[in-house]
Length: 376
Image (tube, rainbow, N blue to C red; front, side, top):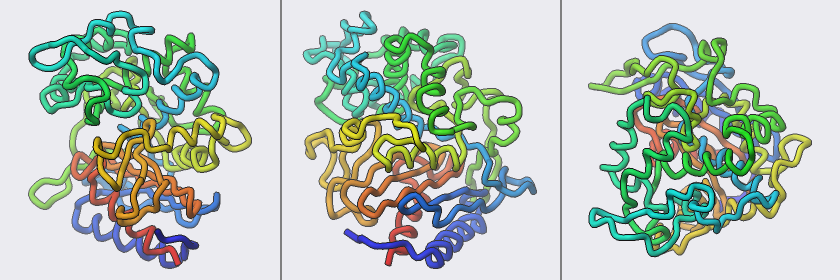
């Protein structure tokens, strides 16, 4: 475990060298990154182009599809309601969605022996959308069958779970956190997007984080990069949709937000400050502690990384760059962040690309390495 203070000159050199190398090789078109230590910005910068093949430079107010970095936001929303006694993490999903009492498991469609619970949704142990066939099926759901988050609940029931809830840990990209979003709006008494805006974005000062960008915000959304035959190209996206073909009337709990570097700094710093967003308390400290606590038996993951509530948690000394207790998440389009309570570091990397995204993205791993190597 490396404990110390970031050298700002070394950090800037590390980050600029790496990102410019990726830009020159066309592995990315541009990125915006920020690193803070103990609440102070050590480096924040925008590099490259906003859109592949175009001349406009990347800017620090650029808006990114943050994809699965929506999940920690949704997890915080659920914990706000748990804090208020509106829901419990061990509540059966069927308490809120009665149709989910009759779930089946596997190709044989045997009955569930363990009720699907809110906790399972938060920890990727639900069995929802947990194999490649199910992931492709979810991605292909027609827009007219998911115009709202409530409509999607009926669609997700059409496939059995991949395993009994709690028996395995397999990533659910969309379904589990979408169900969680529906539970949030049912217990909060307002629609899910409004709850996120009112309870998290507004008190934290996140002015550009939304499921439904305005016309002005769409002008700042970066173009989607892809990498083919050694060249960076512009990848087409569905007009007016943040994710795939999902209508923006359906706020995807696991992947539907757009955000900026400054907005996500405010969210991540709220986690770093154990629930304080600026001068407003979003969550009590005990709920942040629970969020970042390793939730699973190590046999379900590995000795280095465990699952928190909506975040991954560094659980072992063998992880190469981050100290034990660090936590964060990544997005399929290449966004990546972590909070390191040991060194007081908060770090965020923003890009949008169909190439090299998710938890295994090289840009995310290199970002961790470059920050780590700047600690003296």
